[in-house]
Amino acid sequence: MREVREAFARFWPLTRGDRKWLVLIIGCVVVAALAETASILLFAELTDHALKEGSISAFWGPAGAWLGVAVLGAVVGYLGNSLAVWTAERFVLRLRAGVFRHVQDLPPHFFQKHRQGDLVERLTGDVEAIEQMVVSGVVGTVSAAFSAVFYAAAALWLRWDLALVTFVLAPLFLVAARRFSGRIKKASQEERAADGAITSVVEESLGNVVLTQAYNRRRAEEKRLDREARAWMRASVRGARASEMYEQFVEVVETVCVLAVIGLGAWEISAGRMSLGQLLAFAAFLGYLYPPIRNLGQLGLTLTAATAGAERIQEILDAEPAVADPVAPVPAWPVRGWVSLHGTSFRYPGAEHDSLREVTFTAGPGELVIVTGPSGAGKSTLSKLLTRFYDPTAGVICLDGVPLSDVPLEFLRENVALLPQETLILHGTIRENIECGRPGASLADIERAARDAVAHEFISALPEGYDTEIAPGTAILSGGQLQRIAIARAMLRGAPVLVLDEPTTGLDSVAARRVVQPLRRLMAGRTTIMITHDLSLAPDADRILVVDGGRLVEAGTHDELMAWDGVYTRLASPGKGITVSV
Ligand SMILES: Nc1ncnc2c1ncn2[C@@H]1O[C@H](COP(=O)(O)OP(=O)(O)OP(=O)(O)O)[C@@H](O)[C@H]1O
Image: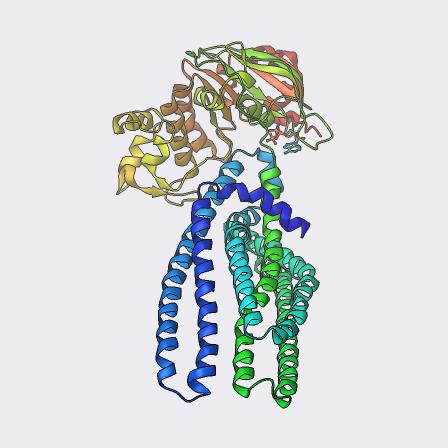
């Protein structure tokens, strides 16, 4: 129960703004319960008078009142339930948006640690589970509690002695619910994790379908899915079994109660203190009294199952973004493009070694600085620091002399544009894909950027031109063409500082040559830091920095470094072999 309380306390604040609706819903629920109670009492009156005495004149009054009460109950029931669904869905909407916003700010290593399918499951199934706990849980509990109290009062009023017998046995329902809640929660946790794993396997397999088919991995992938699906099946059967056991146990408890009432009733009838009609009315009444008590127990189980989802969402919400907007940000300024690193070191969270060690260099407006080095040297890490996905663990990185941690994140990313290793394509038209470099840009600007990126020609040749729909992994365009779209996007952004991470990776030499010309245009007049293995642009670079094992080991122009005969010479002359740092 402590977990339910904790999870509840965490998510209850999200109902702010909707609490007035919750109060209204509860009002409807209470009126509906009252109407229901009144109808039971009217039923008892009908049995006692109209039926027992066989009097039709005694029928009309209670019958009319019963109909009135039933209509009132129906109206408030409809209002309350519709409002409850609306409020619950609003809660889901808000919670999902909040979790999604949080996830978007999380650092790259978070996404390396969590499988995508699992995150999808958390943002869908688990979010709904929390709704069950916070909104439907509250409404359901209040509704069942009020109904139980009203029915109990009515039962006492009808026959206090029989009512007491039924009350004595009622706590058995709650004991049973407690007994089963642990098992149900565990099964529910496993089921949710397995759900996430299934989504992950399907997503990864379909995303890699070429590898699967080319390497005959179909059987292996099927086995992987089968393993997760079986785990899901086991958990869901275990959960269903525990719920069913609870249901059946409750049935038995109910039978015991009915038998106790009939036994006591038989004794009362034999002593002449009760009529058969009264006993039947009371027994029928039990049919009303037990469901809300039973529901209370069932709700307890739903709540414990929902905490499994709540804990999975909490785990995401507890993950901290690696960087935050500065508390006292420097006001925006016309950025010139001086980038300087001073004794910068960085270690990934949880890693044992620094990925960058005491790196110091400066790059100025109009300069092309190439960062190269063996695989695993720390080059991509440098691009993550320059665009502030992480803050250095030691040292400082400045833009125009201002530490990046004092620059508002949005302003920083407007002025330092990243062209990442993998070509990032969004679902949408080519125009939208370029426009996201500068939202709201005119078509003329988009076309100019595409022309500069040598992309206008192939885009115009497409039947739908700039309105052609593309998506990640699209087959309409080649890797080089997609890269040129990404370059057009960066051109449109017009940022004074460019960080290019392996801009020609994955392109064959012809395609790579085709992007070199637009790249040169893109770089003109800006500070460009290009991280690359491909040294075809090296002779043009103002400076080449060679990183090895996280350290800056060589710096100079192509000619200077070639004359040095060090790491760079080996990298630039493949015949001499490339070192790989570990
Ligand atoms: N999320 C992470 N957690 C821990 N260590 C990491 C993480 N990402 C990278 N590393 C480590 O940091 C070091 C530098 O990695 P980085 O990706 O910067 O190398 P790189 O020079 O760009 O390599 P490549 O040229 O192969 O892309 C490597 O030893 C790598 O294992």
